[in-house]
Amino acid sequence: MFDFTALAAMTVIVLAQSSPAMVDQPGQSLTAQPTQAVHLGHILGAAMQCPSLDPKRIRIDTIRFNFVLLAGAKTRSDFVVAGQEFSAAVIEGEDFLKAGRVNCKDTISELITLEKQTDVAVKTKTRRPK
Figure 1 (cartoon, rainbow, N blue to C red):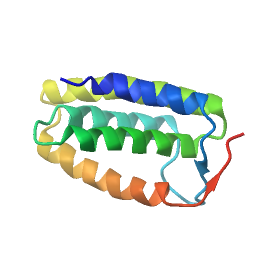
Figure 2 (cartoon, one colour):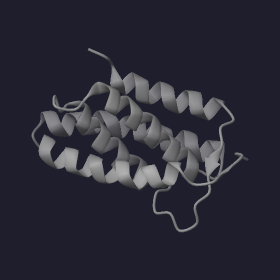
Figure 3 (cartoon, rainbow, N blue to C red):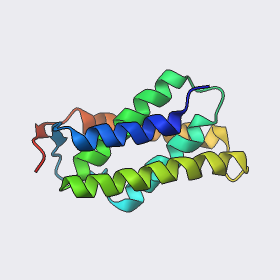
C-alpha cells in the first residue's frame, strides 16, 4: 500500500524548498492559518482510509491542499509551519476514521466541498513568494 502520509510530508518539503508561484486571491477563505492546515489535514487523513476513494485522487488532493497552504502563507516560514501542522493533522485524521470518530460518507462529502473550494483557489492569479 502507498504511504500517503509520506507523500504529504514530501510535498510540503519540496514546495517549501522550491520557488513556486503563490495564489493571491483577496477575500479567499482558504489561508495557511493553523486551523485551515489542521482542517485540511484531518479531512485528507480520514479520506486516505476510505477504501472507495481512488489513491490517485488522494495524491492530487494532497498536492492541491499543499498549494492552498502555500498560497495563504506570507513567508516560507509560515508555509513550513502550516505544512508541519498539516502533516500532523493527516495522521490524526487517519486515526479519527480508524477510531470511528468520523465515517467515510461524511469525510467524502467534506472532501468534495474542499475540492471545489480549493479548485477555485488554485485557478486564481499567482505571485512570486517572498
